[in-house]
Image (cartoon, rainbow, N blue to C red; front, side):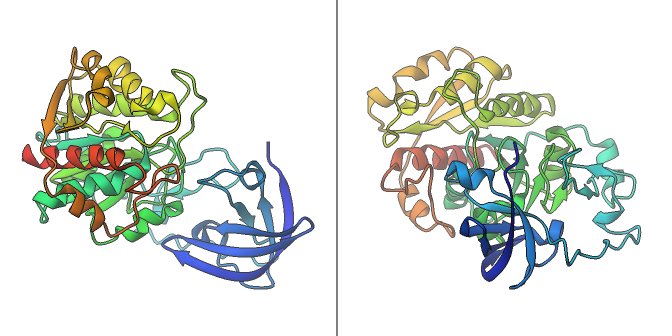
Amino acid sequence: MVRWRSGTVLAVRRSWRGAVELDVSTGDGPVRALAYPSLVGDPAPGDRVLLNVGALVMGLGTGGYALVVALPDRLPADPADDGATRDAGHLVKARYTPLQPIVLGVDEEASPHRAVLATAESLDGMPVVTADLHSALPAILAGIHADRPDARVAYVMTDGGALPAWFSRTLDGLAGHLAGTITTGQAFGGDLEAGTVHTGLLAARHVLHADVTIVTQGPGNLGTGTTWGFSGVALGEVVNATGVLDGRPVGSLRISDGDGRERHRGVSHHSLTAYGRIALTPADLPVPEGLPAALTASLAQLGERHRIVHVPVSGLDAALRASPVPLSTMGRGLDQDHTYFLAAAVAGRHAVSLL
């Protein structure tokens, strides 16, 4: 459960959109902490803070921070509710947790987009690229913009990983390269908020006017090493949602030649389960041309339902190296797991070929 600490802010370190990193002294010594100013206010040196240190104690690679729960001696003012801002909303996210935010849903009555989404039923054939991990996002985007630099790309973030979109430094670095971010389900902090993936996809098409949409969970995949015990199973349901809404599902395969775990070597068991057993709607599954047969041997079972598409890779290495944000997955960069990022990039390349 929650491991509580009380501390004092020593210094404000780096910040990015929606988040600020702190040095905090506690009875256990100094710790690295993270605060979301939209939830708790703006910490300053000398402030007393209440912390949840569970992830820090566990040594999590992605979320290994102490998280600021409150500035008890300097609470932020109530948000203005003028009937025209996101604070006029009624969508409660991270529901019934102590820091549940109340946001304006893109399709709520108070939303300026209500009329559009009240009648929207179709994605009009829009390609939707699904991926297991948040780290695939910039690589997919690189593949899209390698061939169509003018393509409008929206990002729909599901709630399988981080709930606040603000946690992602990748999203901060991609500002200006995406048409916008839509946080769905229990996730929050995007440019637009949606209660479901279906609404998020429709908003990507009809509000952000996306040519292509990318869907992944937020940072911090949960996995137990078992067949069904990983949060990325939800991408199979996104494939189904895309089909229901008349979109074109394109599945980014998780393929690795750098992961030390046998279950993720070649085509990961995550892809085999999500696409092979959960996704009932046929999807295009792009594969980089020229991969060794040992890495792609398990694709045959996915070909029974989906279409395996072999995609040329010319120019994609350069596109990946030109990414506006660093490429990293499970601590491995582009050169340590080149195949992983290349597989994501060909999904993007194939998606724009459908336009």
